[in-house]
Image 1 (cartoon, one colour):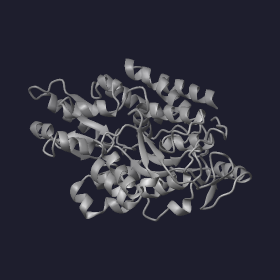
Image 2 (spheres, one colour):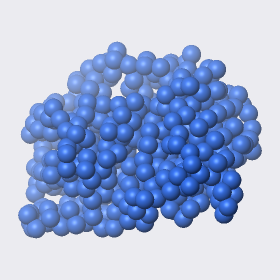
Image 3 (cartoon, rainbow, N blue to C red):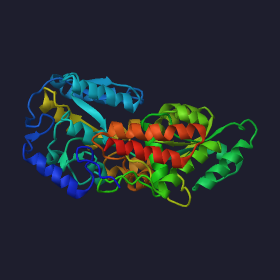
Image 4 (cartoon, rainbow, N blue to C red):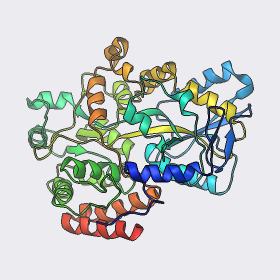
Length: 433
């Protein structure tokens, strides 16, 4: 095993403690000022206009409507929404470029939880006053996504774990039950394909284009098979029979045409469009899709279930989600912190669930009677969150995810060798050490 250098990984309690001790030598903390992107004391001062920067809003303008409510309450602290690409990789690139050019265009940014370590280590975001933001209702693993070196840098506003959307109407027409195992998934696909007019329907879709979605999807196959990328101390442990088995299961699913070849070009919305146009039976997807399906399909045609076991192993979803972070160059940090508190309040979390079906950070909303009546899948989502596992918490996460994609994607394309994919990935990750 290869031990990764501390500048790249923060896994393991001993390693995190050592890094935190080093950081403490040059910075302070407190509720009114904290160490952060600048490496020194940061006061949460300055009120006035700020920007909220996130990926493309697929909710039909519901984010802007919520921001309009803020702007009515606080007209002297106006928030302007900046929408970036719908693709996670391009969102990250835009934010990195903004930080590297010392631009003041971005104030509060929506960071994927796997970017927190990178953005904090590179001093692009500031430490937040944890004592002003934490409450007992926040799901602990979700809160932990905002921590780097025992310091809190990014407040979660939406968590995420995938579920299985399925075409209820087509399963009923074929006379099959909702599958709970991969074997039942493939049998259901065969049964629906036997129906007139559905001979070529796609089976089990996911986001397999060569971008962050591929990392999430292949991580699930690897983790479900019992494999891993790194252990808790940050040691590389990728080349194991379990990891090979996970990659092989994915390759075989493509070769057997149960994951459609078209999925190698799919990001989130591509697969959703296929699902809603009678071209896909099952879709591994984030819960935000529920609102779109309600509008475009109706409850008679779709439903949500837990993702299937694979090889007898319970499915291990990838923990997703986004966090609010304040950029180092933000000039109105008092307003930025005030906005984060408002944007992650119970009212805002309820609004985001109600209007965008974003997974809330508050455990109580998964048991809320009003929300359960509107969104009966919430217990399934909560189970998925409880079972979820994060991607590698790397400071150089962009390099790590690129290595995963570069090693795995070609073998998926050609129905190649899982052993070759894992060996290539091990070599690439060693080169990053």
